[in-house]
Image (cartoon, rainbow, N blue to C red; front, side):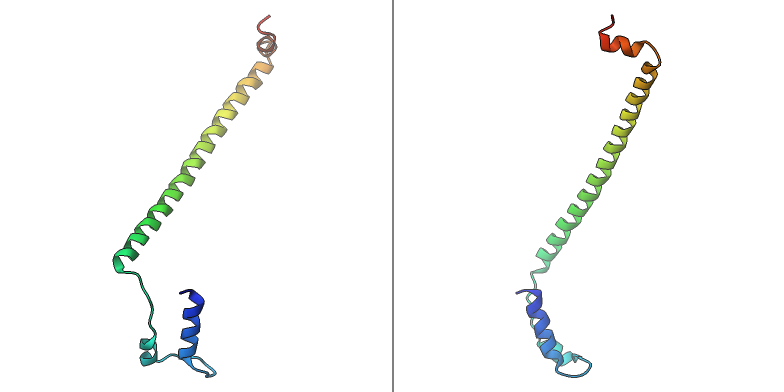
Length: 96
């Protein structure tokens, strides 16, 4: 059963008034299928674990990106320092 079917049932219970309302006895007539509580709790546990894992994964990726940026910056600074000496030309010549 999908959400729209349930939504239609609720609309039908509310009647055709200017301001749709459902009284308690009519609401009690509404039958909803719910999975057992143990399955609902298992679902919540899995979804919670997935969210924590995704959050940790994103934070881990950010950490790796920051470390990669630091390494790239260090390599760039080394290359820049070499470019002001003859060391850069020698490193491309094979040290001739």
